[in-house]
Image 1: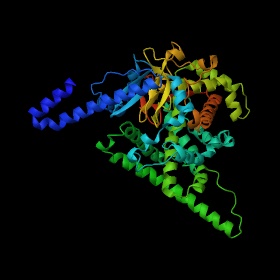
Image 2: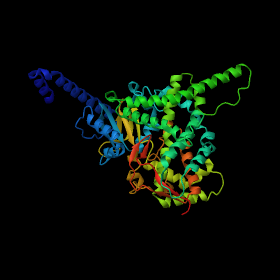
Image 3: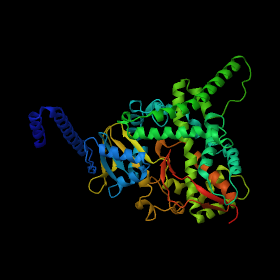
Image 4: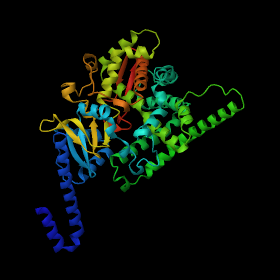
Length: 513
């Protein structure tokens, strides 16, 4: 009240300050009312108070928005995120662009949010906020909730077919082409661009019905740079959702145009093929076998061209980088841990000349441990962010010791930091910062390790990503006795769909030990 009377006195003595003073007073009153209501509802639910951090702007949280923007721009977001949690409770609240945001690295909260009361949380209020994704895309499996999400999930149903994700023949051809492009023994090269072209061909074949041909024709992979710009811009726009209009996005719009030009051609071909097939059937003629790609399935169930482009773009562009970035990180680690490579190779060679089937790859426990350890240290899904759709609770983080439930109100954002959770010494021991695949052979891990999220919105590509990466690693292990790191610098994060090393994967391959 003293502050309000002081503002009133200032406004009456200096009339030109009246409007700013009354605005500050209104915000202060609103903050006081929010605090009282929040306290009442928290006590109703028998919840503890969420710890908060000190901010110089506790009303709008512009300090946090600015520091996050700089971190994203300077490619230091993951160190920034870990720094936010350092020395603080596992769960705390901040103000960010006028909204309350809850940061947590507690696995119980992650489980509750994504698997138990998952319908209380959504992503549409954030990812479709005032057409923030326009003109790139709107509706898709990773931007919608409710019935829209159910339809998007239906459109990507083939991801769930066992015969699809277990079919290693689908990537065998492209892996053969990749192996033929590897340089002679002992020659330094960057594996990352080759892996990008490898997966681009496999991915375009599966999703769009024909490979791009990027492995034999590197110039065809140029569209991937536009995809990376689209992803980078989308991440910035999402993180700065309320103030994104203040920035110049011409470079992003240009990248969106390139990606749309690429996708549109495939959409038109799919619709033309559907129409041609329909006419053959009407004429009583045999239309032949149907296409087996994902786009064909989607186009048959989504006649709206604009919506289909949105659905395909939101699937193809993020998915295009997933396996290649992940496999790059796997090889970056193995090149620096010769003993781990020897274990991988021994396990693969013990399989003999038998086919590298899905079942065989799943039985290679050390290979799977290497993949999991890479996911743990360099998660593709860096943060799990949800917007609260209705007043609810999460089980931990309240009170002095963080053991009480917390009240989460409608509109709150909840963010789970995977780089913090998946290195927490409480769950991973004192060596949680180290690459040690054996930890996945020693104990089972549950909600402290969910690289593909959990619950009904778990990533449908999980088995596909793990199979493709394991297959590539096993093929290399059959041929090469040693993978040598030729870049001794530490890992420097660059954000694409997930963290990628700034200098790539500079290695040399040796057929002899």
